[in-house]
Length: 230
Length: 230
DNA sequence: GCAAATTAATGATTTATTCAAG
DNA sequence: CTTGAATAAATCATTAATTTGC
Image 1 (cartoon, rainbow over the protein chains, first blue to last red):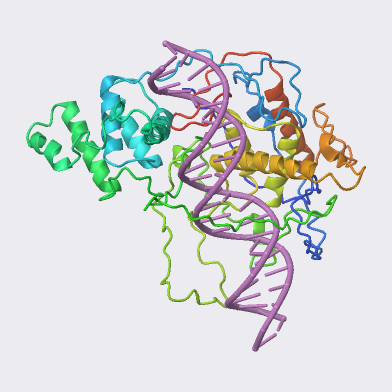
Image 2: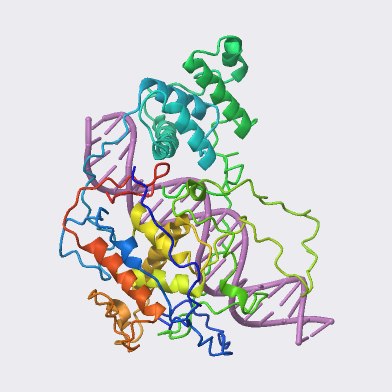
């Protein structure tokens, strides 16, 4: 991955400029207060401003965003259209059986919304079984959570008719008493799978000690930060 | 006992809308903020890595929450002496005027959902005016877009009054002719502001133009920064 | 004049919905 | 149809700006 090099130019900032008021907004009705009326704000702005954005903006090699429709103007319209072209060479993640297995394990163990750090760890682990990125993990949890939820809702909603058909899974599933699973790999550490399994439970333990319920508890733990996008 | 979600109801209803607001945006807080060093804070501490994953990962195990006892909120009001007590990366981004200005410029220029690359660039630029991370940019666009939308909806909903007092401002200037905004500013190119403005528009141009270029925007390994629209 | 109490704004997360690859 | 991916809407949480009572 070519890490886009960005050499930082100027160390010195360009004195903050008055930054003329462009789009004004965010006003408070009751604000009879002036901003900094004081000072004409440093007229001393150094003329030397080596600020070559150009190198950043258009590194020749830099691929650009692409918008298929040319006339796709900005402007107010397009509430949400935002046509885009699809990713060229990028295919979507195709999880392997192992990966899914682990993810489900984590999910059943109570993990719902891993934070950045956890995602990273998970990604590292899962990458042993196939190509995967952090965002895949992130999305997986999002989707799985949502879909489990709607599945549940659907079920509870449909039991007015057929008294039995669904009756699926219920909570049972895998017995997540981690002790059971973990106990066997105390000696052999070579098997990546085993290692991973252990790691998984460690991870779970780390995150949520007890909350292993189906309920959608509001996040018990506030994550300080989150991944960039979603 | 179903899990009942308590509705907060603290949302702002009041919203008196003074038509046409031409005030200033985001006044400088009168609060304990340093008048001068305002922009220089965090100058040296920031690692100059343009692309540090750490910025995307949680910075550190910052003190979260740390709620005081619930008995009474009587927090020891720190006297004027030393106000700020927590700078460290535990607080949320507090944009400077310049940053907001640029972001709004971009927004008005049509940018709505910058991709990873763009976010990265923007972040680099904005970091010249204060501490900022990619996710802040990302969130800003999300929020701004959403709030502009609801504001508009609110407006269109309340146009039952004045038969003709259309809030004209919709289309707002913006002329992508690179740097030629409708400012009466001047022609001097030395102004950092101007340079910045040019950069902004280049950035925009970058996005809305370029017919099609295959690329591999996998800039961010870890988390989704919505590489492409859908 | 100040600082706590209020209130409006907005940054950050989570949830719901939608799109499209396979 | 299933499900990865992405966006929008809703919500939570914290901060800045004002009001208010000394």
